[in-house]
Image (cartoon, rainbow over all chains, first blue to last red; front, side):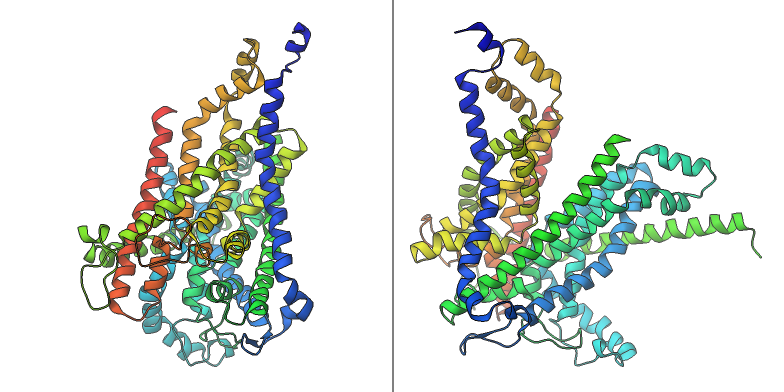
Length: 313
Length: 277
């Protein structure tokens, strides 16, 4: 063999090897493309029949062949929004405390423990929600809320156990570890010089955090929050078990509702309404997929931007 | 009127304390969930539980051995295919990291990692169940494998990136071709990759949604991947949402077993890293 060719790193082995690795890597973009194509194909019948009006239509009756996704879409958006509202302050509080204030010794162990929450399977959250959380809330929390705030339409009775509020609360618990661990990483990537400069100028510890560190990590934290949103939107089992599974929109958070993922989980295995029912469910999956791809894509771009800037300074 | 400096200090102290409180609030659910699992689940944790299949309602001594076997088979088959491909994809993304394909793969893997598992389950249903005309454990394995693939790829890539470039340079300087160099790099990062893989296995072991309409679940022992098969998460779902108190008890114990499986894999993962790094 020509020695120069050897030195240039060529050789048939390398070409074959690189091609094999390339082939393995290409399965991942191929998977994304396959999802788009197959979901669109499966949803074809429902798309032709209902068009974009599917999203905002209501009334879900597999036997009569009417399918409107709005109650499920609305339920998904509402539970996710409520969960974010509750989880973001908590998760950020934990992340900031664990990167800035906590004694060094407990930082890692506490973070690891909270991250354990993310390892608990969704169906176990559902079980716990049904038999521990809901009975507790129905005895101690919901009646008080109804008595004090019942004049507001969203806290009006009657109080159901499985409800939009119960589903939102379990989602809150489930997304805290995600938001916490990503924002903790972002906060850890803030260069120590920033913090030291703030303290040297006479800032208190809280002022250093609120005026320098958090603004510096802002877009990464936003990324973490959006990532949490993505989780909440797609969360299936726990929501299915706690939301009450009713194709209706009620003003009250104490009333049962539905979410897109829950509809699919409950109805897909035996789509009783035949091919159109099946197709409507795949349409629902396509919408859910589209939303989570956009949400996750946006979150990743934001987190990368911070990581790159952190590396440059 | 308070001295402004003292006021600022006081405010700082209050805020720090508030954040300390959030830590307690965030840890509370973990403690409560684990406590309920142990308290309620351990009640009927007996040897029969790991040997028998569910008894008819009203009879005692039922177990979930069929589901433990099913989970092992479904997840094992998924890992067998997804792990090698995932590692190879991760190697590509890190060893040829400048290429456009590497960047694309990385980004798409991150997006897929956030995709709801039920959506991936529908793809498995379309390609396996709808084509064959019946539910099967193989379709469940396919779904879980697709879920594992981007997870394994990303961990592999992150860990291979940590291997110092000097190692690659020394191997190349000794006249190794690129492909043998890559194996040297892979061996160095192996403990970490084992950890990442075990964590991915742990995560998909608890997946329920994509199995609902692929593996479907079953009441019987089965080794046949072409038939419906039981899995621990499916058992928990079915028995938790069913009407009988005996079922609920079974769901708690099955959950405890499921959590133990997931946590043991997690501990094994950590040990694998600690031993050699």
